[in-house]
Amino acid sequence: MNRREALNRVAILMGGAVSAPTIMALMEGCTPKDTASTPFSLSADYQSLVAEIAEVIIPTTDTPGAKEAGVGPFIETMLRDCYSDAQAAHFTKGLKALESKSKELGGSFVSLSSEQKTEVLKGMEAAAGAEKQEAEKVKEIDAETGKVKDDGKGAEKVTPFFNIMKELTLFGYFTSEIGATQELDYVPIPGKYEGCIPLKEGQKAYAL
Image (cartoon, rainbow, N blue to C red):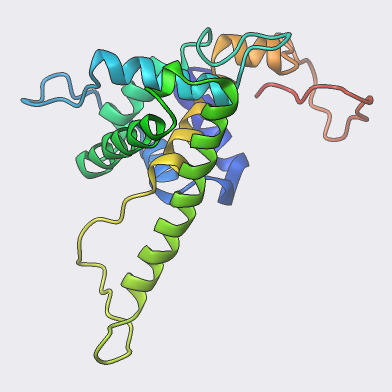
């Protein structure tokens, strides 16, 4: 199984826990855009920032964290090859907003304490929830007629920054070699199919 197949299976298993753009991106497959005139890319500072955010979401414990699993570069590749330009631009806008919030606490996100980083991410998560609710209101009701006005021909709906960041961190980590073999229970030769297996207390989930 290659990584794309693993991503598709994770997307199916996670079901409603991931946003529609992510499911569509993974189910439709990704197309390298290296030949595009203006391919999406993150600056060096934003590459470090994305890797740091991912490490806060999945830190190093008794197993390697998101940085060692290469989640930062994975997210940049996914945004470039699998998401629309509008979604990628919205993600970059979210990084800028996150840095602004960090400066209110005394510096760049990378320089903050663990507690401050967690505080910033909780704030971004709350903002993502509010953004999603506001988008639902705008697309459903016309202020003048009170009727549903979204005919599907309007501007592209984009998923809030934090939601994409969290989804891609989970995808990247659990489909990486580190995530699959050290965080999950990896069985290289699974043998026969068994539909029901008793789990022991504290047992890890099986890798796909």
